Amino acid sequence: MSSQDAERAPQGFSIGTVAGLTGLDPHTIRAWERRHAAVVPGRSPGGTRRYDDSHVLRLQLLKGLVDQGEAIGRVAHLDEPALRERLGRIAGMAGGEARQAVRGRPAVAWLAPNVEAQLDADPAADADLDRVLSADDLDTLLAGLPGIEVDSVVVELERLGPDPEQALAALRVAADGAEVLVVYNFAAAAALARLVRVGARLLRAPLRGAEIRQAVVATHPREPRAKAVPAALGSSPAGEAHEPRFDDTQLARLMEMQTAIACECPSHLAALVSSVGAFERYSRTCESRGDEDALLHRRLALESGRIRSQLETLLEQVCRHDGLAI
Image (cartoon, rainbow, N blue to C red; front, side, top):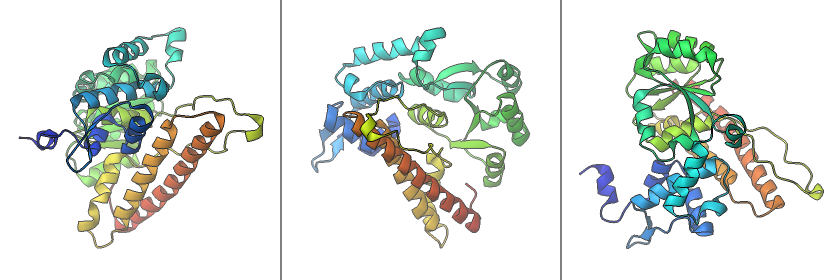
């Protein structure tokens, strides 16, 4: 029996497993349950939440809709066929006014057949990402990129060839500086560090489809949904969003380093970055109950992002001091 099967039987998935399967953090899952009854999990004899496969699928579909600008309060009551129909209608939009209606959907080029195969099996995949180019080899990808506009390029490390650093540099030029995400399984730490220095963002496999989508969407800046703010409240809080400098895989690896080195600061800082980042994402997805509530949650997200960025700076300094390749 696999570890996943062991966790599922006899009482279903834990909320932590569901978070990994859906790309939603536990704070958001609990909020959707409490405020909107989006799912109603069972309970273990000890009172902890337990989820089955239908709960996971439903949360994946809801996340796909919310990522496209739907309010969770408007879709949480829909059954699975209605969610799929609504998601399919958004995914089918193409060109002109219809394409503009899909807010914040990143255009992605792929040199990652294995990753794309995972996304093909995910019912919410096409609603999150606009796959504008798929290639089976590096030359085809390099030839196709100059003629299109992309936000991200996803490439499997082994497909970069014998000189991945040079290939990555060529990709960044061809993609006009777009974010390049490199999916790898096993690789030397020094080689990975060189790729980071050339501008790669690393994702360690195996990854679930929801985690892949979340990583790609996180690299794509979204315009916040416009909300009218009463004059008495003033304008929206000043400040710009701070893009994360560490992905979930890097943070998880750093959090587990306390047994390998005497200083546990990298582990503690990574845990803080992860926690503040989760609250930042949660603040962005909170259902707003009017303009003042929207302004408050916008401020919470911005200030959390600022704090996370400061913690990331400290984490980078500690990692350099301890000689850790991340």
